[in-house]
Length: 254
Ligand code: G
Ligand code: G
Ligand code: MN
Ligand code: NA
Image (cartoon, rainbow, N blue to C red; front, side, top):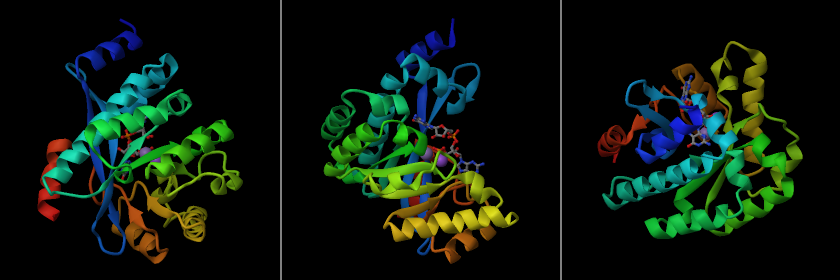
């Protein structure tokens, strides 16, 4: 079987799972939200990370049904946590370029929110810079529709794409996610430290939240706190967790 055929079969057989990674407020230490991250739970190979199959899913268009499954599953899970009184958090879902170009994306998301009975304000959609600027007019139109629904927009992996900064004022953005490559040695590499503080300052001046990704050490946390970053996400707080483990964590902190 080709990888495409195997992906199709995986979707039919329910082999995809979502992991959830918490995001924490830098000042209060409280949960701010979480990001849903896709994995393929292969019966023989075990957990396969998205970088191994998302490129093929994008090329073949399978990312559309897979992406729809991701949205529905993440939203349904978040509603389940909210109904149990465990959390009222925003859940972030990654969107691929192919999804953004999809004719009826806004309608699909609206339908899923209605069917699962979640308000738009509890959803954040993450898109990368390169995806966002591919077709400026389309992106502005789609993101504005999401904005009307109360859905939040995050720019993912910020800083590594093609950063003409002018697009930042064209889109209704809520959050900049500082790419983990800058966080990794922000303390040992002066340039990276400067880039991190500049991105955080830019977010503040434009009234966006700043979330630092890939935070692994207390020293990085302290640095980000000094820079008045809004939130952090990374192994220091928690690895991405299967739903059951996230439920346990929510029970512990709520
Ligand atoms: O979880 P991990 O660090 O392995 O994710 C690697 C990459 O895969 C990240 O860039 C992330 O944005 C992407 N990714 C994870 N889940 C999804 C998803 O549901 N849809 C899309 N399009 N990308 C995802
Ligand atoms: O969507 P995005 O490209 O931001 O995906 C985030 C990816 O980073 C996920 O695959 C997640 O598993 C991974 N990740 C999350 N926290 C950390 C961390 O602290 N260190 C490293 N190396 N990777 C992380
Ligand atoms: Mn992401
Ligand atoms: Na990222």
